[in-house]
Image 1 (cartoon, chains in turn green, purple):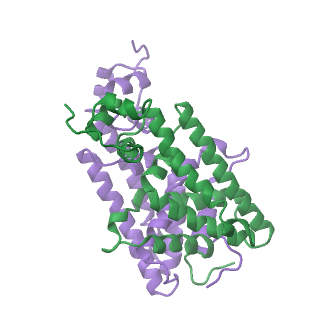
Image 2 (cartoon, rainbow over the protein chains, first blue to last red; image 1 turned 90 degrees about the vertical axis):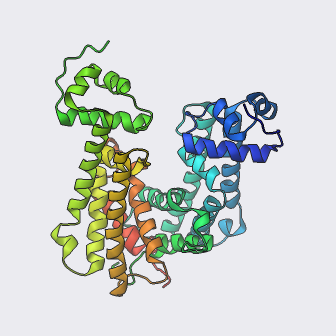
Length: 200
Length: 200
């Protein structure tokens, strides 16, 4: 029987739910699992939210809000497209690391509920805005033309999004890398490549 | 009640199992699910294999055998490390696309059974061999030194492995890309970068 007093705020309850969703998958998570993980009764959880889908929506909104906000930053709006694209790449990597569990959840939703389908649509919108920036940078002559812009967008996000698979904040400081080092490595690798003497 | 006559070979039964594992997750798949997907009884499946873990082991072995074999190809063994690394990158992308469901399964195992832990250990071995090649290429002066080799390895695999998330063979030919185009784009992006005029 859950024994803990319900001292949760919306944010702290959300953090518990996101952890459980990422561990068990959203489909595989029941209110019972959430109740056990939080150490409070199901009815206490219902005091905070209407159900697990509301928790999913809140968690995903948080990730999406951060991602769309970075597209509105001055450095994402002004200057050459390639520089704006580099800024967006760096900031996307930073948001991903700063809000790791929330973005992980966003990247893993598969579209079985209205909330998941909405999340996927919003994520596509974000990808499309970055793809448009990439196309503009190519049109301005700053990106290589022998890689299709759609493929380039996929590979860029492939590299950035892979962070959710291997970046762990607790490893920084002891043999790990800081967020800044990782974001810088992503930008350098994606835009300048690993080779010292590229064949172009 | 399953009605289909059991005309499966080890390979065709494996293909069904891999599809179900990828859809439901290995943990979430029961022999009942496999029986329903194959359209034959559970006892017919037990005629072929000892259980679902054997199917997992066979599927993952197939992916691992392909991956380790490419490390033994002449172009992976001879020449400058950077060229060997490019060859390994291209071939890893090709193997991933050619054996997509099998490599997808390999990349998703999380280590709850002996077979999964073995798969993860073998996968780490593969990654370490590529990382060693990357370090050698850096030592030979062909890779930039301002990105840590461990980070570079992660980002390189992040880009390659992202193919399992978005590459779909059936889209090639109608607006999609051929395997060759995708593999070439991976190599160009990873080694030479997206920019036409890199700042180095």
